[in-house]
Length: 456
Image 1 (cartoon, rainbow, N blue to C red):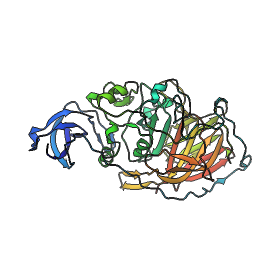
Image 2: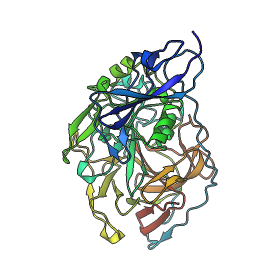
Image 3: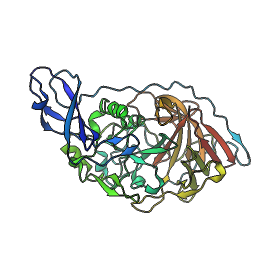
């Protein structure tokens, strides 16, 4: 067979643009548009207008073929390796301006944990995890067969408030929250040690998500993206691990009508393996070494019973420590608050089970927010998590000033102390809050901390 050109198919339904991506096709040596024969779909993408998700197409009309040259005769997308720009910022002490110093004396004493005392004295990780221990939480799982697969990263919305509370987040091992645009944030949740039959609402991807998908070598479920971001995903090293809504993805990806009388997209992780097999997507177990967990350790810390992250007047959240459970409970904004004194909160729950959203660890990461597009009507950022940067770990009612490291785009992010030693997370789930390097940290009270995002 001769070398031939691979085409990206642009599809229009009722005047709306869609993309048919990563299809397997048979194309004659003398290529003609009317001779295109579709042999097998890997996935079909339903599309999104900028700033507005659209319903999936019901009928498709191929109207345009634009060329992207790929040598050889292998059908499907041949992804190119995408390297992440390196963050070379040298971590320096973030200045803290306490309004009260009572009880805020740093300690260098062993820190107790609510995790059962049977945990190994040396901790677990960063490698050599037992086959029944989740390397992303350090906990024994009920169903070890879940660990014989890839993790699954799902993009979940945080706004509009009318769609809250979300579904399925209490089952996630790890969740990253970061600023997107117009005062809003979104989550990318990583599922591995547990499943959920309803996760969402699912929304569109952003450049940042590549950090997470590459780190955890995961499947990526999302609701399309702005065209440059979408093309970035398709042409990345994980381009063949994208799962997108189509008629072929039911019932794993499904829609229900939300309170705003519009469709919301969800994922059923329990049926996902069958779909991945159907789409010929590699779901083999991956090396997820890198994270370190322990219950007993020494470290310089200060009290942290309450930690607030204010992304904007629209999105702000607070993590409150419960000494009985040893976990932090998440409360979220209920109104737009121009002033801190106007903020109002409610406990965020998981709509699947009614349980509050909690975290064993809350990690605040300082990272670059590089402007990709900024106009009067839109903003897009690239947020590379590579190299090193300042970090704060909140666990067991204490806050620790650390440094985050990620040397390669396939490495998991790790935390280190001032001496360059791995610093342990508490066994359990972790929330990462990603803010810009120029953001503020203040201490309104002895056990209360506030991070305020400042954009470039």
